[in-house]
Amino acid sequence: MYHFAFLSVVADTPGPRSRNSTVPLWIRRTLAADPPRAKSLLVTVFGDALAPHGGCVQLKALIELLRPFDINERLVRTSVFRLVKEGWLEASRNGRESSYGLTKPGRRRLTYAYARVYERVLEPWKGDWTLILVRAEELSTERRQQLRQELEWQGLRQLAPQLYAHPRIQPGSLTELLERIGARKKVVSFGNATTDRIGCGDFQELVNERWNLVGVAKQYRRFLRNFGRIQEILNDSAGLLPQHWFSIRILMIHAFRRAVLHDPLLPEELLPKPWVGNEAYQLARELYRLSLRGSEELLVDMCGFENGFSNASILKERFL
Image 1 (tube, rainbow, N blue to C red):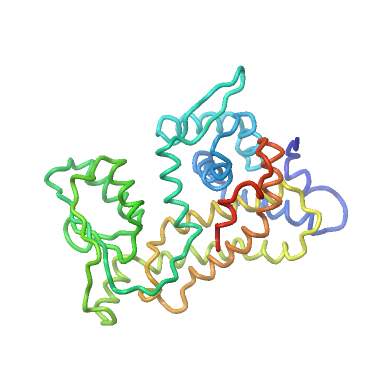
Image 2: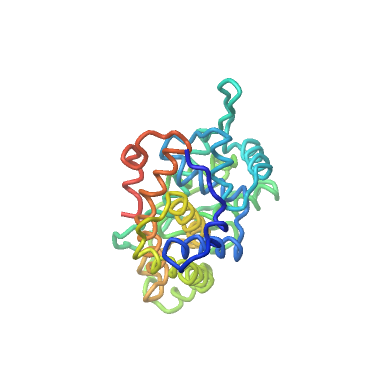
């Protein structure tokens, strides 16, 4: 079983600078520049690395997986406890060993969330919209605020009081969030609504104003700056350890997930040309493919998953 030698030790090893020392140094600097929050990183690890293998892991293995990210045992235990309270995880015991796995609602929520990360819809947009009309009088102020936040996380924006819209929204993810917050019977949805104003200047101005694509582009440019360098280093990656590949994979997908969280994922027809999000997606795709097999070796050894990448067919469908 691998036991993570703390990455700073590897980076500080004397001798000529090589690819093998540059990568741990990059990992250490990335962590120092933008330390991930424990609970958020746990969601990334469960959603990206553990869910394809059943979504359940022993607590001691989870502690070891998070150690190289400067997240200690206490923070892991505290974050796991909070995720259990929030309905993401559930506990089980086998003798003296504690394990934690995704609940059914947690797995369903992650499935829809990560579809936004790994997939890009390429079919031409036909000009149809999904409209959501909120029956505000039937919701408390707190519930209305929660619903607005959840709808905006899914990329919808408010066009008029209590009216939200998106040109390409997943019906499954919309249904899931409405059921989760108990608001499914408090809204009226209209699918395949169309407009005759596509291509008009005022319509494009409305899109830019409501969806703040300038802010979204800034997030993607930051991702490209931070992770473009490691792509150059990995062009010659012979001899890297599985723990390095796992750190690269998780740091990358964690940063990319946060950028996508702000992206409403509008159709190409409504985006600026060229769209920087496409470049960021291609970089994420390349880094994921480079790091996948090595990182799976670590998961097999540390978590006991059988056959890793070759046995987790869902992994082969990501970033196609």
